Structure formats: C-alpha cells, structure tokens
Image (cartoon, rainbow, N blue to C red):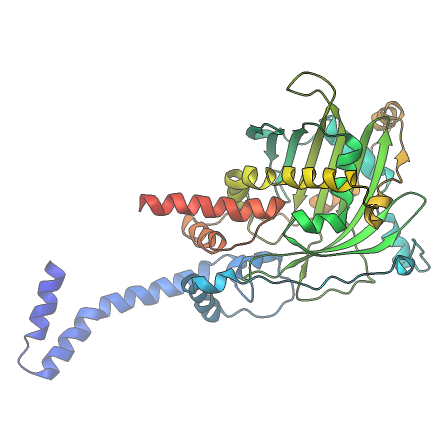
Length: 422
C-alpha cells in the first residue's frame, strides 16, 4: 500500500516536469538493482549456461563458437511461452542398407587399427563380469526403486563416481520368457523401432560373421530445444551355458563424420546379463532375469538427469514389457529373423570359471572405465532456480523412450507437483 500511495503522490504533481523528475527518482533504485543483478549474473554464470541452439546441450558443446546470452535468454522464454510448438517431433528417414554392402572388419591404416582395438573385446567382457558379480571395486550402489507388475518385477540402483556421469544398475524379472528371446529382442534393431519411440534411425555400419561383433549407428530423438543424439555403438554377445553377456558401448569411427546435428554421444555404455530365473508365481524356471548396467553423457546437466531418472524411470521401464510380448507373438508367427537378430545368434563361448581365474591376476583397466576417468573433473551442480527452469522445459516435451524418456517424464512429474504447491 505504501508503494501505491507514493506512486499516486507522484501523479498529483502540479506540472509534467515535476512528475517526470519524481518518477525518475522513484525508479532509479529499481534500475540500479536490475543493472547490478545483470552484471553479477553475467560474471558468475556457469559454463553450461552459455545457451545456443539447444540450451540443454550445456558444457558438452565444444565447437568453440561464442555464445550470446541475450539471444539465448530470449530463446528460452520463447520456448516456455510457445507451448504449442513443444509438440513438434523430428524424424529421420531410415536408409535400407543392402546386406551385401555391410563390410566386415577390415583395417589398413594405423588410425583404423586403433579403432579396431576400441571395438568390443575380452577386456570389456572381464569388466562387465566384475560388474555382474559386484567385484569391480566401484562405489556402493544405492537402491532407487522396487516395483512390479503381474508380468515383471523391477529393481534399480544408482551410484555416483568422482568424475563422469551417474551409473545405473537394474534387475528385471520377466515372466514366461527365455534368455534366447530376450537376447534377440534387445538386439533386433528392425523390431525395436516398433516399441522404442525414441529410435528414429538405426543402421548397421560393420559386422563380423565370425565373432558376431557389430558396429551400428543410432539416432535418438530428443526435445526440439536439444539436438537429436547420434550413437556409434560397438556390440557383441558372449555365451556361458544358458547365460548371455550382451555388451554395447560407444566406439570411435572416423568413417562416420561428425555433424552439428545430430550431436554425437561419445561416452556410452549399456550392457545386459541375461539368464534364466525362477518364476515368482510358482517357483519354476520359466522366467528370465536381465541385469542391466548403463551410463552415458547425453550433454544434459547430470543433476537434472538424476532428478528425472529418480522420478520417472518406472514409467519408462514398464513400457518395455508390451514390446517384449509383441516380439514373442512376432517370432511365434514364423516371421523370418531380421539381419540384426540373425547376428545375435553368433555368440562367442566363454568359460566363466576360467574368466574369474583370469580376473584374479589381471590388473589392466578396461576401456569403459578409462573413458570415464579421462573426463575432466567438473562439478555440474546447478542452482535451484536453474533446475526449475530446466525442469519446465523438459516437462513440456512430448519426448519418450527408455533412459532419456525417464529423464523427461520424471522432470515433468516433479514440476507438476511443484506447480500444485504454488
């Protein structure tokens, strides 16, 4: 009320000149505070706040181009206010590559020889086996979730390293499923497009019919204020009795040039151990257990990513089961195997006992850990206000799918609850 009274007194000045002078004196402290706030914000802003075409690309951008904060702020406000524009989706036309054009692994230069060593090797298998047995020497896993449906049960854990993105571990029991079915299901890129709505492009770049090793290119859909993400993934399956060790990780490929869009994700690791399990219904071995270990640096601030996973992972994971049941019907119909599912039948045999004996004498660090440790230490902590801003933008997105879908869904739910309390 005092502010309104002071403003009315200004308007009652006898001349226009006096009123203008009083208004200038009245607003000078406000403009001074705004000016100081802008200066402080400009001086202390975090590196990832230099927003460009995709403001959540954050510190992952390394192209060296100067960022204009004023334009970025305008872009953010426009993206928040224009909610109808948030419904747009990008799609890429998948190319049908003839099987005869997919090369086997051939290397004829030092650079390509280096890339060969970065494909999935036995060192990756040893590292993954340690993860499965919880003997990798990493931080303690913290349980995040324990949920179930009539057809599946799910548990999830997370741990944070000193450097690198958060790592996730999950255990899923699928009723009335076999390890062979799950192995083919997760490997079948052609069928994945029918249930994984984030995958807009999948192409096999290289394959080896002897070992079953593949190098594939994925493009995954992200919200429009971020670039879509490109993955160059090396993958291979080992078999030990009825257990399958399915390893996938990001690998370098100079034959695939980098582009501004989609933005390539270099740090990527996602591997499954698939094995038979007892059904929770009757105790018979008619169920299948899938142990998943996953981490990646998508270029989204890690605190926002952790918030989304914590709130929305279950909503994303429970959508996998309908895809699995559709795949069971697809295979039961006698449909021929796709090329990627055919490659899933080529499995290197491994003796787990011999592998454990090798692990006890091995001191070499796997490449997956080297990739994480080579990251420059960085604190990606962000203020509460910026988390809310990022949550608003993510919550407005219609993007969906697996880990990244959990990030989007979780932030949306978190922000919705915040809005109800305001």
